[in-house]
Length: 556
Image (cartoon, rainbow, N blue to C red):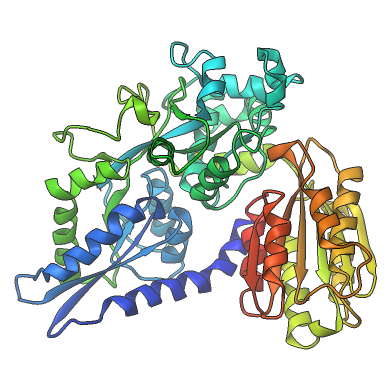
């Protein structure tokens, strides 16, 4: 699945990388040496102003060339995949943590004589991987006196009573979130930490440990409470802090995001309950943001020297002290930690007490495979506009991208496909994809366009069928693609919003992801439909529709 999705993202990664580079070369006269950096987006607010400041100061090499730094935010795993495949050629890779460095080096060694990066790298800033939880819920579990960890998450996840077992039936079920381990640092950190907790270790994880049947059950229990996955840790934070406890009880993220949210709450910018950082009692990882000058043929000695100069700049006291303002702990241990790094902002500077050992590349790869076996399945309805306005390149791109999307889903996921024009049609009922994949691909390849647009009727029917036939123990979602405004429905927008937004399940409710396909699509209406369910709206065209479907696939 990862290989297919990564290929769809690659062109966007390259375009983003080049666009950032082009924008940075303005107003520089004379000889320059360019240092391109791809970095984990979690530190964007801290790093971007420093790049601008460094470039404005016009630092020079020993030969008198002006150093020009170009920095592009990318997912930690996506970016190294693009580097290894040769799609991008940066000077520096700075992922969110060192967890994936052994994997990157192992994959690079398969075709090169040396590691992609040195084994010992300097950290830029630090932030522990934590479980962010609403303070009233954390206190119900005994926080801060009683340590909380993955074992508690597993018990909550499988509890039939949910929070009612603790005397709070109004909180409903326990709802949990973490990102997709194939794309996000916090996602792979979560998967590895769950495995460590399941086998009762803090280091020395082996392939034999992963064969334990009790571990499989433990992971399945934890994952059963996931509302959905995703590419971005920031997306989980935004959704949790926007929509409140009914959407997510807790989510894996970074300590700095808890600090940021509490800063907003304390200043009156957020009406939500207080949130606190839980440092799992079984252990966690540092998001340590290493700075890796690549051992690649495209990195010249001059670029390496310039990259090391910029690294020294970032590690200097003024820049390290600035990191505190953004909720990071400086990599320099001599700097005093001050507000907002304090209990008032939901964090404990005495934590983490146990830091887990980064596994070998082989074990990390095996954990990713194991996660795919235990992750929460999805029940999904895809609804595609086949009205007359979809003729030409639109219907061709929509067909081919939907076919690629179908190939991405796991065999045990359940899929239903519907189309609509003047009326609503069913290509496939809701059933496991593994037993019908090829026949469904054949049916989708024959989709043709014609007629009007019954968007509201189709959306409502898909939602109602999934609510009736879907498994509430699965992630449930609807994907709707349309290129125009509704012209044929008997239902109206108010009726649709009233039904799809009326669920009291919060984060476990059916999510609707909408795709505004082309300039004529009514983006305002599609955004209302997606937002009321906690889904996401996308704007796309024939050139981006493949990437959009690939992004949606990471939620599952």
